Every structure is written in structure tokens, then in C-alpha cells.
Image (cartoon, helix red, strand yellow):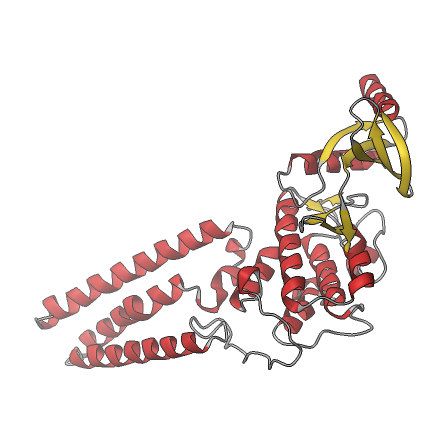
Length: 370
């Protein structure tokens, strides 16, 4: 403990205050190297949070160089970021085009995914706590009201958050968790697109409006349950990365996609055509194959089962029909590559079972040449 106090004193003496950014946060200069940093005085209980964040390797999180605990507070030294906050950017430039807003949110979601894996809830996702660097990088800053998620705890011990961005559970209704940050992301998203909080003005252009609405549901059980679900939704509608659409303000919204049906989920015309042709061929093959083996009730039932397994169930599982891996509780916290591997293995299993059953019906029961 004494060693920590000595380190805190060393940091205070080594970094010279130059200007105040906000309360308890200063721009400082290292007395020997003359390099510029940010020094923060934070509550003692936040030191473990900052130490965990320090271990996360991602250039989109403010870099934390060192921390030390003093008698009644902790000192944190972070990088000085050359850039502007989203708040300042919106004030200067107004609302962002859809593609630009989605790119910023995508970066933010990927950062939150890493933070949430460490069990950390930021609890203050606002335009003032997200920066755009001069070289175009989105950075999440300020973990001053973050907390460690505690599974056995019913509510937070302290009610904190920024009005308008704080989720209902931050006012003491339940414990904050990953869905709390998702709520704030939804509010921030709406602000980027409209310049206003959702309570003042909603973004109305589909399908992004539905994604935002699900983020800001009052009941956390109705929101996206983790940030990967939002990233998946962005990918489905080609709203992220290089596939994002440019918002012209006059373009008609894409048609609604049937929920979770492979080939009809993106609103893309060419995928509609290919999927329609594929499903027609699957239907025709199924009818032909089943009718060919309908001479007895036994062969009819077994052939129908075989066709369902290897023609329909196997490929639809591989294509994640209905987003099954999001609806099955067992899969929700599994990383996406593991989910994909499980789906492929299930696909292969069902295909092999169906194929062997087909062989049994045709060769053993009916003696039909394939």
C-alpha cells in the first residue's frame, strides 16, 4: 500500500499540469520527455477497472499508460488524443450521413465487445466520450463511471449516468449489464443521424430505424442481448463496413426481409432471384424423390424423413435459418467462429444421416437404382 502511495506521488511530481480539460482531468507534460499526456484523478474503486482496460489491446480505446492508488483517490495517466469529440463534431457539422454514422457505431460496438468480455460496463456512452482522431480513428474514452458486472447483484449500488443516454436500469430499477451500453449506443446512433435525442426526434428510415428502436427499448429483455447481435443486423442489411449505404435522403428504404429466411434477409434483388430458384429446385426434387419411393407407407415415411434431413434441414442449419444461434440460450455467449463451426458440424451430421437413410430406402427396401 505504501508503495502505491509513493507511485502516486511520483506521478504527481513527474507530470506537470498544463491545462484542465474538465473536473479532475488535466492535460499534462512529462517533465523529462516533454511528451503530452492526460492525467485523471478517479475514485479508488475505479482502479481495478482501469487496470483491466489497460490490458485490452485495441487502438480504438484510449491508451492507459499507468495507474496508481493514493490515499483517497487514484491517478490514471492516459494518452492525449488529437481530435474532436462526437459532440463537438455534430455541433460543427450537423447530423452525419447514414454510412458515416454506421461506420462509427460499428467501431464502437467492436470496442464494447472486447470490454464486455472483460465484464466491464462503460455506463456513459455519449458523444462527449467518443472521439474522432485527426487520422480518422474512433476512440472510446472516459471509464470514470464504469463498473464490473456482478451476476448475483440485483441493482447497482450507485445511480450514475448522463441524462438522455442512461438506460432505465441506471436509475435503480435493476443491475446494469451489457444491454445498458446497448441502450446508450442506440441513443447515440439516433443523435448522430438526427442531431436530437430519441425523445425529441426519431430517425425514421428503415431498416436502421428498427435497429435503433430495438437498442433503446425500455425493457432490457426486448433489446439486443449483446453487441454481436447488432453487428449481425448491420451485416444482414449491408449497413456496415464498405457495404454501408450512402444516405441521400431520397432513396426508398429497402423492402422488409422475411425474418431469418436464407436468401431473403438482405433485401438484395439478385439474392431473391437465386434463392427463389434454389428453393424451387429443392421443392421439385423433394416431390420427385418422395413420389418415387411411395410404393409403401414405410418407404414413404422414411424417404420423406431422409429428404427433410439432407435436402432441407442440413443446408438451412448451415445458413442459420431464423437466426437460431441467437434464440437458443446455450449459444448466446459463444463466440461467432464457434457458432459457425457448430452449425457446420450439425449440417454435416444431418446430411449424412439423411443420405444413409436414403440409401437404405432405395437399395434395401425398394431396390431402386439411383
